Length: 336
Ligand code: NAD
Ligand code: WQD
View 1: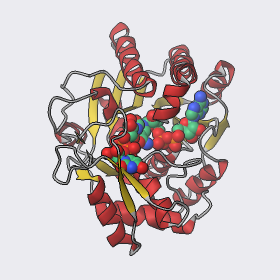
View 2: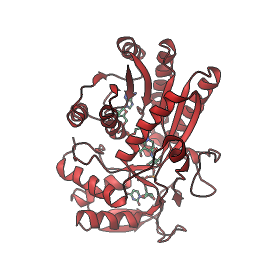
View 3: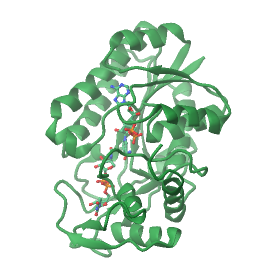
View 4: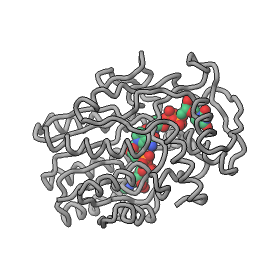
């Protein structure tokens, strides 16, 4: 029996596949390589010493989704596949709604046809919108995500919750990630964005590598300890291990459960810059720029529910996240 991992070649998916394979699971990857490369799949096999079956296909192609289920004994699904660039989702909302929602519909359809009723979904802290307080708990009301990308995450959470309500024998685990950064200790897989990065850590890495000249710090007048935005950065390997625990959970219950995957610690933009400088020995020039539209001052998790119910806590701190991100960039100056 195998786990179908949609988006398994991507940043979080590739690290999760390594952890799943190392824990003895069989893995089938379904990925269009819209935002990843086939090389990632070879590296997953190299790092785990195990083989995976690969479907180089798009979730928008319902026939290919059907084929993956027909040709394999799938027992659970981890659904990473989706487009995730916040700014692009504002420019091209239909692309995001179609890719993320229609792709999910084809997946659920095939699951229903094949009697597969366990799914772990990649959601995001963005579904909390503007939180009234931090740390954020899973029982906080969901807010108004600021952009079409975030809205697809909230909609998919709601769709999966409705599917489970209609058929109570489903097990749905919704994982709300905070800010995943870092890379595998080997430096072989990591975050490999196309073009100029939107997110903080890949941007810092490119400044450190000399490909970008300086970091723009978006706002230093937030009500935080140094005025810059505070986030809950989590090592991608910790996040990947959270999925191994989430699969165990999905096998042990029927219902819908939501878990925050974060460390519970908030760091500011300047905290991250300084930690990165310590880890790499490279100075990161930065300039204070205006606030970025849609940003909130502080966002960090209360991860107690994941600890209590999944037996999961993050192990790595910010220094290791920075060191591992930098190791990956140095080993892969031109990406994967
Ligand atoms: P990623 O872009 O590296 O990985 C997503 C993968 O899905 C890519 O390999 C891409 O090729 C694939 N994909 C996209 N659309 C597809 C389609 N229609 N058919 C088949 N494959 C498709 O992103 P990531 O950072 O690894 O994120 C994984 C998931 O976690 C996404 O759903 C994302 O929204 C969610 N998430 C990410 C973050 C983050 O900060 N990285 C935070 C919260 C949630
Ligand atoms: C972190 C902090 C910025 C870049 C995003 C998505 C969210 C989720 C995770 C998927 C903020 C500041 C950034 C830069 C900066 N993704 N910053 N200069 O915005 O917390 O979350 O990724 O679900 O939905 O919105 O992450 O890394 O972009 O920003 O000062 O060049 O760094 O203002 O305070 P964010 P981020």
